[in-house]
Image (cartoon, helix red, strand yellow):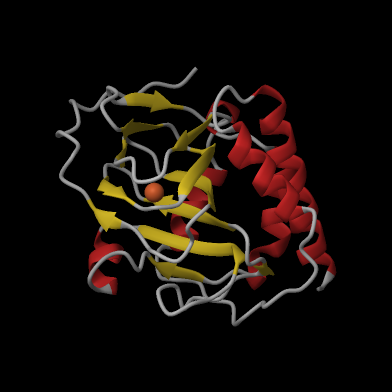
Length: 225
Ligand SMILES: [Fe+2]
């Protein structure tokens, strides 16, 4: 593991430990995740890849004022690791062009490649998966579900999020929340992109499936502060 991977691994652990200190939901999953992150000792860097459009979105987020960003130590580690990252159009879509149209890109940080997720992971774990989710402005990421429980930490960009029967909520950088196993969820960006960190625990073998269990999102409302 090179030094940038070590730094990213440490920053990931620190970030989730800080989240666990104040988290009001998902404590069991957070403990599983933190335990796994403490035992990362091998890496499969794979080949770096900058999917078209990723740099433009990240630069746009990097230029935002402080109220749209959080987790500076992790962001710094991520920036140093940037040249190693393998970004790809979200493979949950039927083809790459659909993901590119939505400006929806993913980057696998922790986990292991499989038939359902062939893209490389920067750090190796068989117990959890952690990755980055990037979505362009004014986009809807449709409702979906998966057997794994999913924790999210918003890194940059304020967006609207929905889960289960709850109303759509505006989530800001620094917010943490969990989607339970097979709980349908969706997100919608406003006038800025979204960069979020996700972590899966539980059944990692089945990728997301689209869901019809969530109603259409409300009218767009942008806010920050
Ligand atoms: Fe999800």
